Amino acid sequence: MSVFNTPAERYLRDIIAIPSVTGHEGLIKDHLATTFEEIGLEVELQHVDRDRYNVIGRLGEGPVKLMLCTHMDVIPALDETLWHSPPFEATVKEGRIYGRGAVDAKGPLAAAMEAMLRIKNDGVRLKGSVAIAAVVEEETGRSLGARKLMEKYSPAMGIIMEPTGLRISVAHKGAIRPVITIHGKSAHSSSPDKGVNAISIAAEVLRELELYRSKVMEVADPMLGRSSLEVTMIQGGERINVVPEKCQIYVDRRLIPGETVESAYDELDEVVKSVGDRAKAHIILKLLCSYPTSRTDENEKIVVIVKDALERKGLTSEPMGFPAGCDMHTFVARGIPTVILGPGGIYQAHTIDEYIEKEDLRLGVDVYEDIINNVMT
Image (cartoon, rainbow, N blue to C red; front, side, top):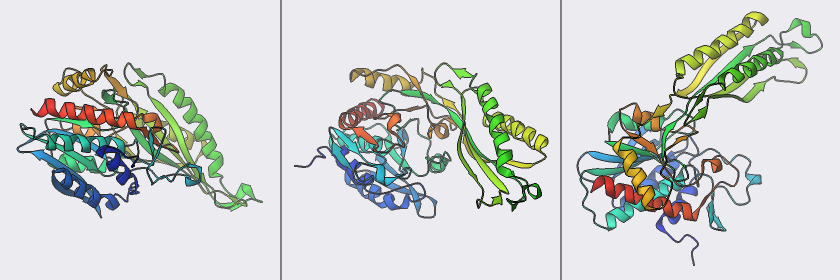
């Protein structure tokens, strides 16, 4: 007997098996398009770049009233030897489905696919159309697929499917992700006075960043908590016997309402310049990607509908903030009232032995179906 007992579980099994790591989403597009067609959806492949396409499935006629959107890309498995089961092979154990993307965000996608299947099979008469969109490149923070999606679609309301524990989220943090490049001068390490040690200067930058981090974390939002700054990667040096001529520091700076991408960048640039002036060093701040905070008013129709659906399932309906980034801001920028909602916990995202509870997946299907019915009929 199969341990994948429901359509959502089988959908999830199949898409976990496709390693759609960011940049390689072309591997999964045909499978999603075929499965959407089997569900009975009208399918569109929207070209983004190279062999990467957003996959959109529509049910009903007329303008899109509701769009359920999530990303098809996943982060790499990291160290596969640490996994207790193959990361790109769905494995069931003690009521959980394990695999890369199980919760972020292929689980929510699979739940929405079964919800659409139920709506189709029930022959529900829809007023307008409902769409499910699987987009490329969310994990880098660039929202490349979602931005492309919004060039063509303008649904009346949206749901971004991320693992919120089936709690409705009406806001998320923004972010800037820059790299700080310190340029020194190489020399033989036996004659360090003839060089400029980029790593030593980087240590001064790190000290200033730690002081700036304390200032950043003084700011808080009632729903989203504190803003933050974290150094997440450092790269420098070429050989053990060479004074390093370059060192790079990668920073993840999270924003809350009241902070903008521009103001956060300018403040960080001042910190970097102050070190450069003191050390008489050439230091460059380059922004790799960014996205703003976004929020949907709690009186919007989509918020009320989702809260009602959660209450009918006996789930918490109090709105919260989503601590991570997602594609919601691309919808909100177009004036589309949007919430974030999905099964599974964000704490499982990007982990070794990532998993989603089968029961969470089942509840996700029920909630999405309830929402679609109440929006579309």
